[in-house]
Image 1: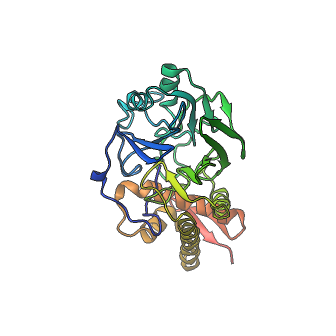
Image 2: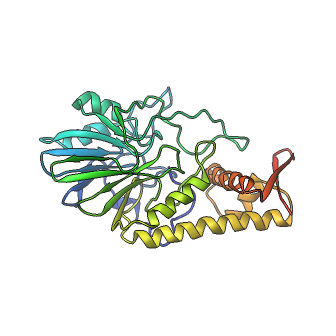
Image 3: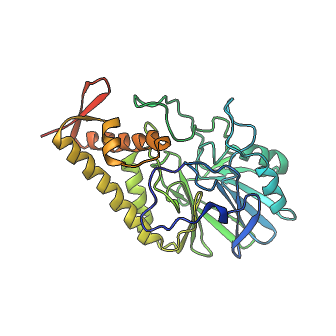
Length: 319
């Protein structure tokens, strides 16, 4: 799920340019099928990627379903599994791969497996019980409690098919189980929600971790991938430039927090109001989660401390 600001250096296309349910060729080995779940957190919707133009095909981030998970209504995933199956007709599905287990990414893995018999391969299972850590209802998607992988990939592990090889790149931060997948033959990297083509990402405690997220960004910066295919938004054709900007953006947010706390103790709602002026009110919760992640990271560094309730939890700068 996305966060609250356009990613540095990204021009956001109009949503009308995107068509759901159609297999769009991005390069000879890669097609995209867009799920019908646009929202303030997903932009145009979740992009499912099909890797392989020959006998074998892998599906990356099968997306949402129309039935929902754990009793929750789904965000318009109806028909997406059928669209995937139609797109891969005549090919053998050898892997259903998930970057992480938010509800807009992994729930369709089960019905797709039921229809094809293909194994679910990729990130580890994860379920988080979190009511908002004191700042209201969490704004990013709930985790998918029904996700059950047949094989979990460790950093550097590979899976291959006819003409393609995908390698797992461990990128915790947005979630602790987040993976990217590198297509070794072309230099493409499927980045899930770690790096997106329209927005910065939510880092939402307790599972989301800002220090891990920054380390994962630095890891990608050291790589030589030529294009990113994110789960939301357009392809990133200058990945190193984007990642460098995202690292700088997070450091600026940290500096903002330290400046505000240097003026006076403050609460997360007050900091969000000052740091995200003009923000769509629907995204206040997401902004608060990312501010909380920065605060926890700064607290771990010994630079700030939790103060008294006021009635919201106050944070103070350590002199």
